[in-house]
Length: 445
Ligand code: UDP
Ligand code: MG
Image (cartoon, rainbow, N blue to C red; front, top):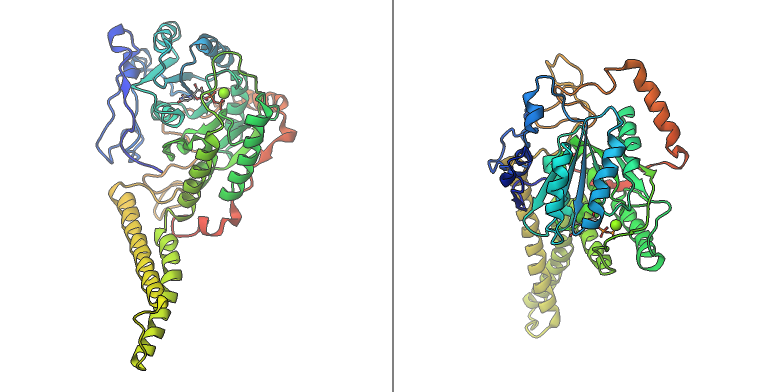
């Protein structure tokens, strides 16, 4: 679902402030496709590289950011101050350089004003204020577009997720290059049983089965990613609930780890039971996308053939009768045959149109059809060289410092400490969707 132009607008919150906030808020998004907006040589039409805050950019010793925390929020003013404090207390003692990208999704409860105030006191807080309420997925995307850290962590703004869990997740990504995404699992979920937990259990089973990516808790917002994976995703509608499936399709290796969960004490939930129906519809979209994005002719054309062949056989049979002198004009079978042939042919044409679109998408938009983990190109000097335009998950960005390289011994020790604090025995390595069959098919994988 890599797509190009922005589907949302931001408000320049910082311009009238005279603060360096403006550096983050008055973002000019490049409308030009195929430009290297990332500064990493990667054709990245949809990425917006936001300049680092003036103070950082000016320093020759500036290090790239390690962690970007992205939080979408809609009318959460009562939680905002504590949220920022708790993220700061969780990350400040760590060795990582971090930023908190708080995306105000069109709140009308005074959140933007408070955000502005909090950002004056916390240089690592980068507010983004959307022009209206777009929904959680687009708000997340607005944060992803601006994330500069090697790792991206998401959570909700209502303090149901615990910011104190963030360091263990990041530590795990840093320690284990074999993992690209860590998905939180609210084992002690603090929500109502009937209206929340039960539908959620059913939805998790359904999504796991349908997409082949088996998770206990698709709905947990607390997740940590390597940024390379985030760059491969494009969120629309309410697809934030399906990020693990989409990430898996984009080549990510995922683990699910237990995280804390608290009841909502302030503000109200933005979703009702009606979301269940939207989840089912979105699931149809995601399954179609995962299976047939690369080969729409097989989806439409397959069904088309099932109709066209029997329709053709019926018409051939009626033609034979006609040639033998029988009157076929009033036979219902004639109508069935004609309808089957017409619909079948239309479906095949729809599949061919889909094939044209997918070629335009990949070739015109220069969207990669696949991502590699390793590839040795002929003539390449370094192992792990890869095709232009695709960065490997786990690969460091040019110029990014090696994790823990500044403290060779300390890194192992830190990792062990973090490991001790994680409830690892309950951790689940998400089953690779190896049985997907058609999902993995095609030249794209
Ligand atoms: N949210 C948002 N835009 C919306 C709805 C929700 O940014 O249109 C944010 C909300 O402020 C919260 C997160 O998305 O930070 C999850 O929402 P909520 O806690 O209401 O969902 P629940 O936990 O009840 O499923
Ligand atoms: Mg919540």
